Image (cartoon, rainbow, N blue to C red; front, top):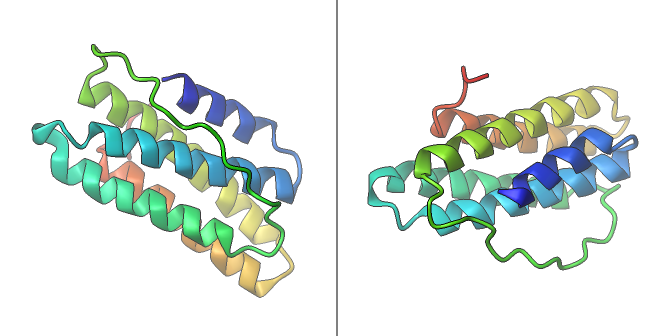
Length: 140
């Protein structure tokens, strides 16, 4: 799940609002692609569908922030191997969504624009929802 690892690194390396917004947008996009890919696993279908909807919503909230740089289309084809389990995907996506939520919550508190603060807070809430849906709220 190289895309999720790369997304975590980009998120951690972001030092300013535009960089963080760009990294968070991409993280939501990456989570969305991987969650949609996993929707074929019938045992986890409802959780992945609902988490994918939250990822799309989070991405859309980020897109509304004024400071978001122009988003370039990136190749998001899967990087999941055939032996990647639904549980592994859920754990990895939950970990990334926790990080996204933490970073967006922190930046929302320091954003001067009330509108941008609201967008960041709502995107963070979607990231928390992803974590909860995938059972990762209490995972390390």
